[in-house]
Image (tube, rainbow, N blue to C red):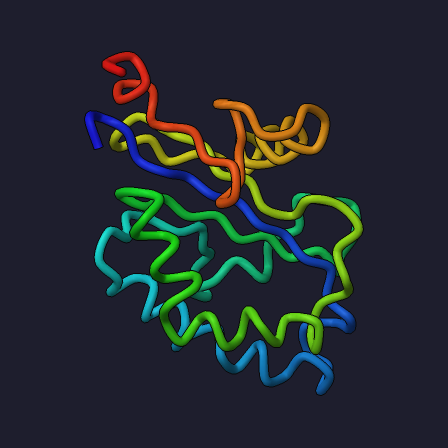
Length: 154
């Protein structure tokens, strides 16, 4: 998309530790859902450790908060994966495994092609969205902003 790709971050507070039976079904679904994301049209990158997921990463002081970050070719590619693939079924069931969010937990933003955002960048974008609402710096699926090159041409 004119030299830009879409980055996303989402976080969630687990109802129980990752090794608890309470979240076992979610944990068991990670590998197949991640493999589906990796094979999806428009997928570019996702945050992961050698375990193949990001559940071992704890960028917050709270050990129950999990983080997910990825980069996609377009907002439509990400939206199709999130809302129209098997991922959507797990998304609908998120309250079985995660506490109800009391603040914004997902942020989207444009990155130059080839840029892999570090976790700190994702957290900064999420914090910006929480503080300022949707802007070109960080936005949501509901209130989208065009990629910078596209916006400049409009």
